[in-house]
Image 1: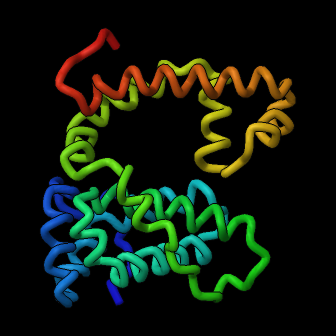
Image 2: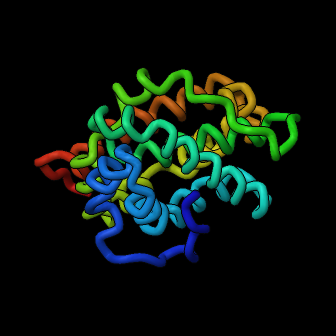
Image 3: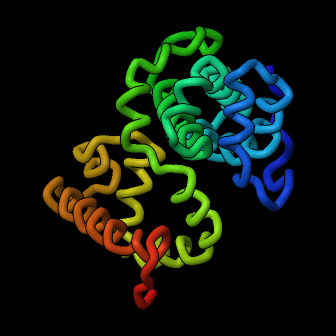
Length: 204
C-alpha cells in the first residue's frame, strides 16, 4: 500500500513528468515506483476529493481506494496510453461523488471500475496533460472569463454531481436558463481549450 499523502504542494516541481514511466514499472510489480506516483500526485488527487466531500477522514479513505484501484488496474491504464494524472482525477471525482450520495458504510470496499475500457478511450493523453500543467496560469484565466452564473452552474455539475434540474433548484433559476448557461460554458471551454493544449493561441 502506498504511503499517505504529503501536504498539498509537496513533491518535486516536475510532478507529472514521469508518472507514466513509473506506472509502467508498477504494472510489473514495482511497489517503489507506485509509491513514487503516490508521493508526486496524491496531494492533488486529495484536493479533488476534498472539494466534494466535507469530511477529512472519508476523503483520505477515498484517496486510498482510488490508488488501490490504480494498482489493480495498472497494466490496463499503462497500456491504454492515457495520462495517469487524468485517470486519477476522473476516478477520484467519480468515487467521491458516489460516496457522497451513497448510504453504504464508508469502510465498504469500492466497486470495480466496470467502465474502465470506455473511460480510457476518451481521457486526455499524457502529452495533453503536460501541456495543461505548463500553462496552468492560462487555464486559470480561461476559467476566470466564464460569467459568474455559468461558472456557478458548472461547479455544481463537476464537484456536486448535480443534474441540470438539481442545479436549477439550487440556484433558484428556471431549468431552461440553467441548460442554456451550461451549454454556453461548454462551448466557451471547447473553443478555449486549443489555447491551453493546442498549438495556436487566442486572445485571452
